[in-house]
Image (cartoon, rainbow, N blue to C red; front, side):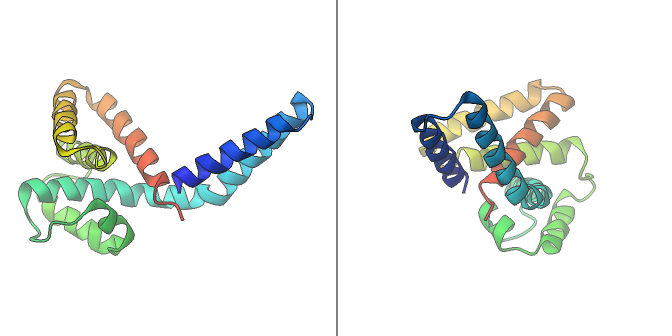
Length: 161
């Protein structure tokens, strides 16, 4: 979906550059299109963000702690699993760690970057995930939270329908 939006924006920009309208008209058209995109997808995107964050946390938590015997993929957790079941699974996996804990945040970062790097060749993905793990240990909580928020926001865009 993210690619489709980019293609639509590129097509719109090409069409706008071909026409001989004034700069003001072009800016107004672009603003109208951007507003249309926000209106169309904003609500859905906002609803997806917490589901994506929980899915990322559970994915990494389960990968490490193996509280569920099924090796879920993040996409499956987001698109198929009931959000209440997903939340219960995360709660079980985190055990004594709270969802706002350092541990949960770190699991979320690992899960989000795992999906962001999923298209890379295995060796390159492993190298980049090692860098992510190193960054997690060196960044402050605020920096990790900002990174997680940004990663999840971008990740959720790919699940818009």
